[in-house]
Image (cartoon, rainbow, N blue to C red):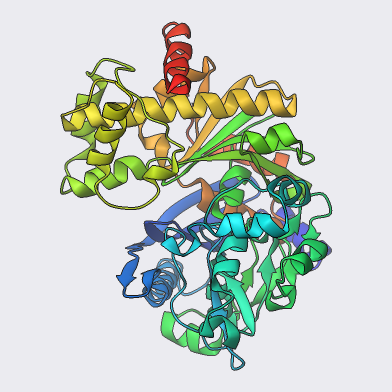
Length: 497
């Protein structure tokens, strides 16, 4: 659409309809967004599970089931809109990828980032490029599953020898939908192969590590066209073509941060879900050695921004406990946890010891026992331990980001699945000693939709997108309660162990 057409469209007050495919580490969803000059509505068309599979060679994503869920979702979205969609956008979790052969066929199911293949790999990389040098070049935090380490682990395999193209997960699904290949920038920035200052590939670093960047498809920016749905996809979903696919912030955190309902002021954000991503939105990366030591990452966001944040294990801890307990009612569990004394026991919510699935209640109890704290025994006590620990980790991340970026914070915005957890939101306000504003639960889908709408001229820059969010989405404010000293004391206890 040309600029003049977009302007005429917006002035006429028309409403456009978008499908946001939003894939999380435990579930996927296809949402329908309807956007007008001063309206924004979101509804769920289809939700489906994302269940990894353990096979003899390791933990894998069931990417065919995910693609089937996407097609089912697009069919459901079309059924609710008379078969018409103005655009489709895809976002997902970061770092993981699929490999394609000469014919463009997928070489096996993508490896799950929780797979053990990267154990000990970082040390091999650091032998060629020391960790401090790697951070100065890429600004990315250390995480054992970063794409760089996955590629290093995969390089000696027969499958990798056959690979002619690497597509990150949302780019892979976009390719299956359209036949067009690209690498969206916000997700590319999580590979540890992008220079956050130039916002392009770090060719010198890749050369030193023996990584051929021609494996990656050309970079795309959020808002760029990504092709049209193939005729076979239109037939299977019942959609009326042509339906364009638009590149969005395809890292779900990039889309979620775009949907932070902040209007001015100095703010921090926490994107909550399987992970908690806590930090700041900055104009430039922070690449100091102190920042590296604090394990902050500089990922790329919309409109030239940097997502300066720390990864925290997040509600994964509670999700795994609930799974181990057979799926008890979460509302009941949270009410019972609210009655447990605060800060009785806490664990380090960023500890890699909690990364792998399985035995989470026992592992949390063991961590408390090993540190000489009271051992939580009941489900309510374990739940309270998790929520107190997450709030404490949120506090530490916000305070460290303020200090390292010299960027004071006046309010914390929480978006994502954790907004449904009022206890966690209140504990985060208490721990941070700052107001918490809980925004959209489906923040990633909203950010996804807004980037598509912007490509059609319905909204302008990031600030305008956020003003539309604040006018149209419900927000809940939590004021800090109780003395901050008890949270400082809890952190001191944790640091002393």
